[in-house]
Image (cartoon, rainbow, N blue to C red; front, side, top):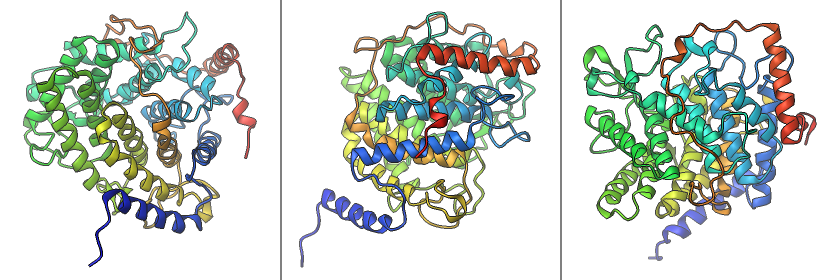
Length: 466
């Protein structure tokens, strides 16, 4: 009998086979750091060139086409896209889109600089607000260039989102705690409490605790995780994260659908809590157990033969536009979790590499030029879109995670100014939305121009091709 392969040898063999197979079908390469940068640059350029319209005359800065029925994309996904591009800049060093990122993220902050713009009230959920807040937090953690002094700063924006969501006004006695999916009571879904809305609050609390050293943020993160566990949204045996439940049942009839970004958002937050509690062995051990449970379940549930997979919808072909963007968050958040909890890197990084290889193999769809697809593990493609491009960009660029510094803190080089009192009006969304006028749309272009002029470039990427 021949000796068995070691784990490292087995991974290497799988990747070598995948490399040979994919070399014949993929227009991209991830074989070297330079190849990863080139691939990521092309995917990013295609994403913005094809799907983003916010910097064009008559469009709204920072937004993707939507929301339905106007276009495919809800407001939150644009916030996720800018976060993906912040990671792209951090991993590759390519600052081509930094001016666009800054202008867009500042234009969408709302009147109170807490990512609750009045014109998005009809679809404003805690998770929508949370995704923009997490992108601002990422900007602070990666030392993304600071906005002009007269504009809100990244850390302060993340604190504003956290403060509005941690406010007692967002919490009630139903289901023993937790925040609701939607913020305005008139929105469909207000009667639902779910894992992703509470996951955003938990995630922000964990990251703010580590960045600032303030225990108050950690306390809220702890309370949020404990509620998710107690109410049963997280399985006590498998660490499966279930979607949510309605308040009129006391959250007792749980919708047990599982989505990959729920697993990833709690894994990332738990990794930050693990890092934050260094020096507290008993507490850190508890967070390690949570990381291990979430990671083990995530690897089994959301990866098929080493390739990212969305089991709730992918096999049936029922993924919504939202769901079609989840794989990129898994790659990015798993990668950052490995930075702050490095003991998981030997398990995480080879998995992300094999998944990224499968991802780039979808980027030669005959009907779509070099745009990327969704069904990385095989099967009929569901077409292309911004989410699909985001997924591949997150998968490829995050392969460079070992070549960049991990997220900074205020004590380890952070450059963003905070405001612990930011966002103290959790109900500012109740103000009457302002009508979008032609002047507003033109104004968006002016704001874009001014901010980009300050940052040192005017939409150079729009004329940059491959």
